[in-house]
Length: 210
Length: 210
DNA sequence: AAATGTGAAGTTGTTCACAGCT
DNA sequence: AGCTGTGAACAACTTCACATTT
Image (cartoon, rainbow over all chains, first blue to last red; front, top):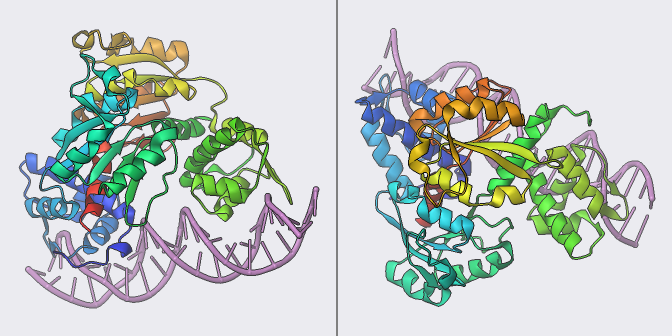
């Protein structure tokens, strides 16, 4: 295992790793085997120095005078991100957004497997449109244990979010993708990523006014 | 109109404005009229100095010794963000994710009105589950002109994203919420916010490995 | 010659410390 | 006395400049 002081690596650098990985895959599909930081950086929309700096947080992967081996760099990024093996995920909260995410099969394509969908009122969502059985909350524990789930997608209403988050963390979840528009308070060792679509639109709205 | 050099205001500060606004609304609903930076900051998950600094980018809104007037601050933030009036939005690309976003009615709740949904192949999506008529791309121009649309949500496949973005920008769109996993290249005056759910999961994945 | 890797410089964003109102 | 507003100090992140390797 790569020895790095993880706290010193900017969170943003880790996000960019995902971007690089996508660009590299496109290059690979185009039959390109070697790429310079200049070219890859342009594809990723960053400066080449930033790309090189980002990579050196994790080690040395290039050949001076030549560039980076595309395949090898893809390998190393997916190893770093832990996306080499299929990661099990649960979705909690199957209202409008949760249902939307369930029918969006994008997660599966990217190395994540939704192993369960849960809701406080599962029965009301047993419609034809729901592509997966929705289970009641009391089955959460079994599923999390069975699949050793470390990640959860949280789509419950804001009033319930903190409580459900506590429950998930109690069951061993250490990473939460939170769609509820509240600030979750969690222990330091738990990672929360927030996504708020309304907030993204509001932010854009600001820039529309000249 | 408030006179500020917009480029000097951190993008993150504008995101936080959305957070503050949500917290303030909760306070208002609880019948609270005045709030100190200390209390509001705690609710928003930031330091009180940061809250105060963020607000002073836009002016002075508090009363020393007292705090901020909840209603007035809500007003001022929604004016700044341009969310006082309903903002028309189009969705382009009605595949899995686009359809998911259409059925998720969250945008409407937050001051945005979806005035049109477009797809290169509209017919194939005319299912019972789609809550809105999906129009062909050649009707985009009419709808954008009619509603004076400045914002678009882009959910097309990555291969089409740049081209569709160009088209939108040509029709007068100045703000794009991009769900396609590519880096759009756009003129400086256009604002793009990227949301990539797979990337958020990948990022979490990194933090799971201890 | 070409391109990486990296300490140092520069830039941006956050926090502190406290002056200044109410 | 209490709490805001803000210049100055600090921290985080990005870019530069160039030494180093192939």
